[in-house]
Length: 155
Image 1 (spheres, rainbow, N blue to C red):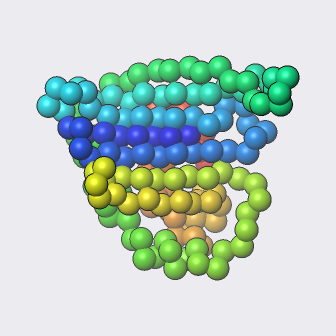
Image 2 (cartoon, helix red, strand yellow):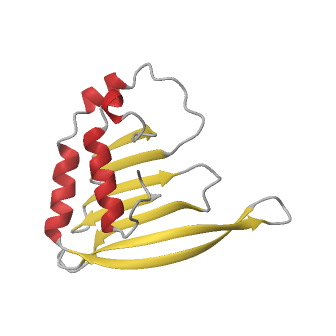
């Protein structure tokens, strides 16, 4: 899954979400951005890929659904500010010696500007969030899923 938030064509937030191959609707891209009109028209674009099987060459066959949901600038600013409050030092230290997880989900958060941005790669952040120090970031991810109309997809 990808969640991209763009504001006034400079700042952005993206959340890419992937789940195990047993999940049919995977991955999902959620893009939040502003159109080129001085940031007055914000929206979330949800792009869901649905697995329909495997072709003759052994490649996955997908159909794609796209849905657009309006949001306001204040919502973008709130999510952006929430991400700036993350304690990256705590996230890194809590996950330094974490064992390998072979199943679960992958979340990649990327935000900033095209020139200066931060990227966080988290493996199953909703698995023992207190231990991983991901409780705050999991709350942000859940809020984005809810706003995108994907209730219960990220638990």
